[in-house]
Image 1 (cartoon, one colour):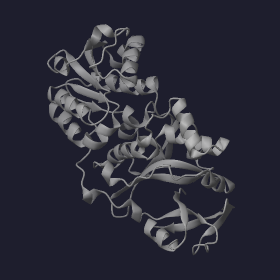
Image 2 (cartoon, rainbow, N blue to C red; image 1 turned 180 degrees about the vertical axis):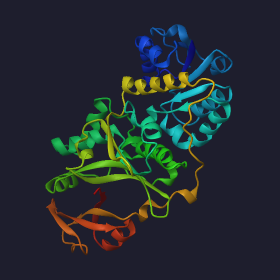
Image 3 (cartoon, rainbow, N blue to C red; image 1 turned 30 degrees about the vertical axis):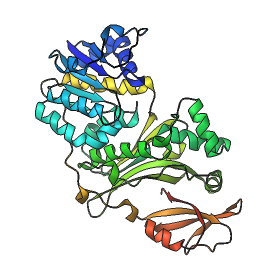
Image 4 (cartoon, helix red, strand yellow; image 1 turned 90 degrees about the vertical axis):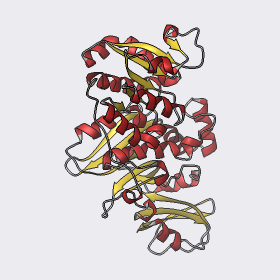
Length: 396
């Protein structure tokens, strides 16, 4: 028998309780032993919940109970969740989480504690929601030298951009629709400004390339500058606009990671990922390119990924499940703004075409071009003096 405690009874925490309950037989079969929910820690009251009997308000109850072997952290953020996670690991308990901010910010430290204590720190649900991505990279693709990883890592922004492309909605209208449908928070900044995707590509970069990449090392742009004019002009030439997180190794061996809107050719599988779906492409030197696709969020898809980690942690009680990466530092991460890519630029009409650029056409008094591969600074230098409205990378 393995006893589990859940920290936080919000959307994901309640989903985990439900999956552990409803799928108890499948979970036990996967783990090779019974897994039982013993506590749910939350300062709020849930008198109508069928899981009320498990509720406690003090984390110390879990921390001090030697019968609790696995703690599921679904609190979110990097403050209380960090404190409780660290205390649980130090108490010799494995921790499973869906908390992307915590893993992106403190993952190296927490993995080190888990290794020292012989327990597991697992976070499959922190990147792709219900999409298996962490374990496939660390195990199934372990024979590969990974050169690049990129993808649509945020379902809210993908929904907004899909509505702008398919139905011609302005950004503000598409955002309001996303909020009405429950895809976006009342304050959508973490999504539309790219912070959510930044945390996820930080985790993926750390996992793929072996050293912790911190969010503040990842230049990040969201989609608030994308307009209907950009969507229309891109579509004329067979492109869709997608917010991508991307990381790759440079010739100097360092990692270059960033988040930003891209023009993606419709021939690329990523261009076909629509609505709230996510898609992640991994390029390895042996396997080539593979894509992972599915629901990137949601109560039960995310809970499914969390419980899969609970099963893995239960299998490795006494030894821990190893998935560490090395320490981070400025020496491991290059300036992504120096990466050379093709560029899309749109400026108010009347400007001369940038040198070497291919004209896309005009709309509503502005003109757009595709510029050849160059760094961001070179692209900005070529467009100096122009009334630039938009400038995005082009994925090749």
